[in-house]
Image 1 (tube, chains in turn cyan, brown):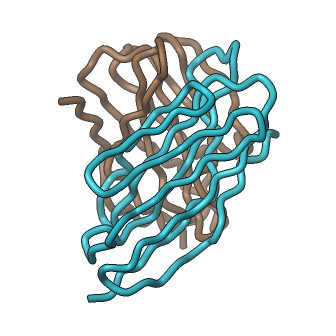
Image 2 (image 1 turned 30 degrees about the vertical axis):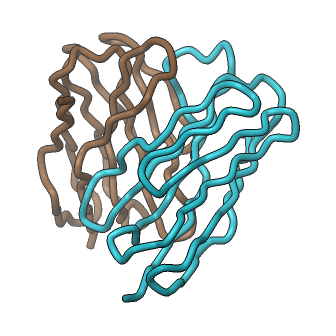
Length: 114
Length: 113
């Protein structure tokens, strides 16, 4: 089983704080790295899919970077709002992967207090 | 908009019962997946399917089976439910090409007494 590790497991910040968390994945046989956002009582939703080393993606105040050579991705949230409270999941897809299988990390649970 | 639906949001069953969890997607996706989510363990893949009648074991298939008779429907079966199968079950689908973003259903919270 390939290991995808996320840190920290949980994070509590105040409204307006900027925050970031890490996803580590195997650097060999890399095809894509996904980030999902999972709000309580909702389904996980895709935020970003990144494939190239050095990729940077941005959606509103959320951005992500990718380093495939060393096997990590960072997710940044600038000026966190209470509605950013969710679990953020990353998932690794390896090359030659029949069936679109993703390996998920255990998630980082973010709580933003007003 | 992709829609993935699951038959129940909450389900309570007794030990030893046979349990069916149904998942339907409306976007003609090739791939479908069943996960379970437990606190601190993230999403763990139980089974997946990349075509009708095709299935592959995921990381934790023991105690489960699946059925995919039609492209849009993927069923998870607990042959004889046990208390350690109490969990949140999530179904997902993906198109089967390129980056394979997965689209998730709302989840079924299963409690086995």
